Image 1: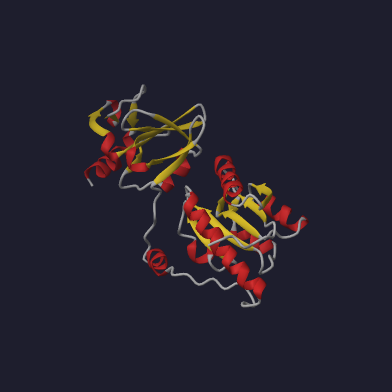
Image 2: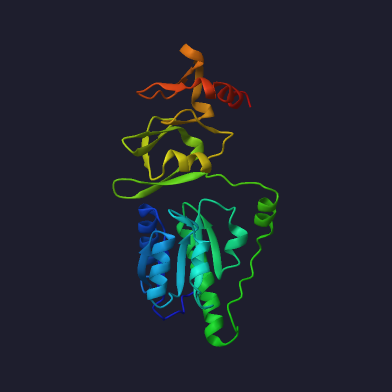
Length: 270
């Protein structure tokens, strides 16, 4: 579809992870150079303050889980006009039902793919074109979310399947199934794949623990999360603790405390 929207669309990005907000800004500049990113806010509080002191943007790209809470609390404090549309971005799809009750155009799971964002933008432009031509009194979003709704209502959670990581001059994705283990060091988080390559992740181990499939990943200790396929041997250690050997091997030991030893064995045997 040829882009027929001549208006300089005003965009607000609500995202608390700097790599993601940079990527979104770059994608918008590439896909719609005539659009203007008015601001990037990183929290509920900052977003509310910006929206209360500025005209509402035409479209918001909004992460659902922010550093100080869930984004839906923004709408409890700020009334957005019907013309302001939202594309939700998140690693969690458990919020999908609530998302589509709030002026939503689309719902994209992280890491955001260029083609998916472009499809959401085209959807917005089609709705805007109908609105401007008088064929629609307000935006009407009609989508088939039956399977997504079914998954949520049945309690099925979608776990993260890939990460977006920064290279020297570009971005790349790494699938979680290729990650042998993840560890933290000096307040940084690193993923190591089965080939021994290291990647920096912009997440804490606490965040990752809730996003990764517990059938495949286990938080062995405060420093390390293991993939089940990376564990090749487990030894009994002093005081009822365990010592884990992985392939590839890190340059540090991987202990499992006595309190977690039984749970770890159960996980290994599933």
